[in-house]
Image (cartoon, rainbow, N blue to C red):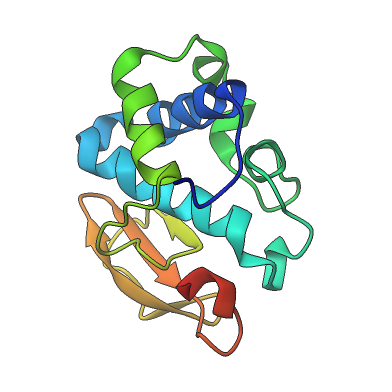
Length: 141
């Protein structure tokens, strides 16, 4: 059962986002980006109050994903990334992004907080940040 309603086009859109944001981080890195995306579509809090579906999440502006501004994002989805997108849409969660709403690639160590959100860990070059359950309870369901 899916944790976010979606169409086949949404799966491919999410797959393109995973590749464009984290292909260099391997499958695990792409799954982590997928967790962040799905969490944003579920959150109904903070910067994501009006984000209710995959398309809105991918193209959110301001505050969305930089990859949507690059040509690489607009290439067709590949089978590997499509399968990864399906996994996160079914609710599979992966540490350190299982409850994260943000990630970024710092020049050095991960700051303990980023925009008042706590660091949950690092995977390769990306640091992940989650809200509190008080601020965003839907992320934790």
